[in-house]
Length: 85
Image (cartoon, rainbow, N blue to C red; front, side, top):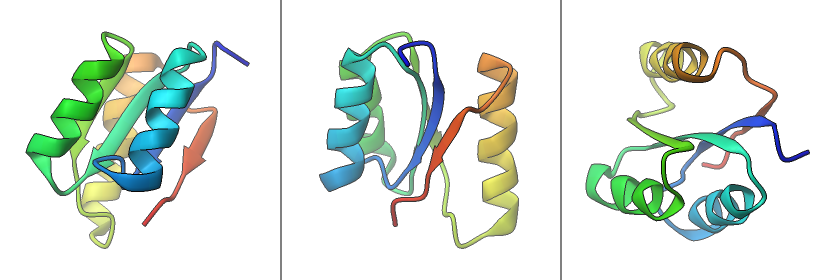
């Protein structure tokens, strides 16, 4: 399962950040989303080059589309989407 491409919303703290760190250690390519840019970037930087941070508010449909497009542009597919709000 290490080659999965995973999107995680609410990834700037709490369960979302913990899941991102865990899956990053497992080898997943991650697209991480949250509204808090500084915290989101800190989580992504600890994971490394396989993590893409996208500032997004998932209550806005255009932000969800931006998140989807960013993941597809970077990794070419999405295998898992974790909606952690």
